[in-house]
Image (cartoon, rainbow, N blue to C red):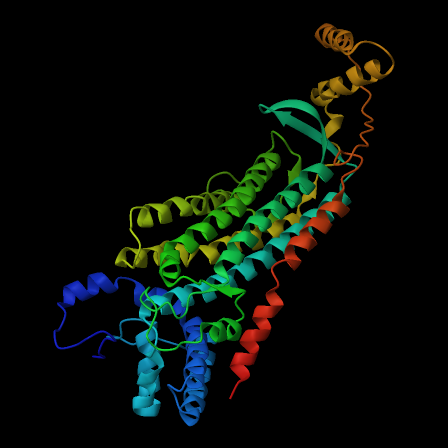
Length: 447
């Protein structure tokens, strides 16, 4: 059995070890390639301050690159008896390079190593989430423009209220995603700060060059105060979770709308047949299971911030093992949200819109406000116009003009989708993903 990084002469009770390690070996596979990347930056810095020889750095970098590519291809495993990803990487290095492999831990703790791994993993995942949001956004804008002239009922209190349009409906969710992405960007910027060098939360007596590792890993800046760097464990996950929850809330609402509008009682849209499922007893059924599951998964993601808060809420400054449990709810959440975004974009692309909803006279009364406004524009006091139209409706004498002429910004006749697109482009450019990509590429190509 492999020894632990912290092990001395006392062997830990096996049941205690099983309990304390928990799911770390499984969850650390999410972090493997990021752990290797962090080690590459760290040892490059160690060589620059004289804690590694040049030939030692060359040998270590070559082996770490091989481990990185193994992790990237899904071949990296944490062996039985090995505690975590950090131990596995160090074990693999020592097998190949002997005692040189043990030098990579100088000047750092598993605490700042985990902090770094989580930040590198999270910023990569946030990029993927942002890109999936952009795909869905683009689909919504396309459909908004395509169906901008197709009217549909708008609702308040689930009562037919006023004319809306599919241009507004699709476009509303597109603009909602822009705001969600802005919150995601804030979480990304808080994530993209380097904790490496904070060690166990109190720094190191080695003359570490933290600016160097910050640059090597493409961070915007570092978490300067070493105590605060350690306090960021859990806080970063909580902030990101709130951003994910906001996106999930938007997708959940869209999924509910689509399920409702797809039902026979509404008949506003038709979901693609290959995205629905049948009933085991009712041959006519085409159930919107994908959007129902999307709604449930997104509602589950909206509970993520509360789970993280309750794990970390009453901890003073410094490291505590409680924080390990956050990984169990946090790491898998990204793929779940990405799946929901991908499914939603696919269905929005193929959704069919009913262009004849308003042929049904039950929607006639939603044009009442249009008639009130027409009378008011012709000189009748608004309250008198309101009363006249109301009485006409009660007497069955209301005959609507179903042509609408809304021209102000953001209305049926002036969607402002170009402005919404510009907002999205501005937020996307603010992430500056290229800086990270170039830094990581340089690190992986270094000798």
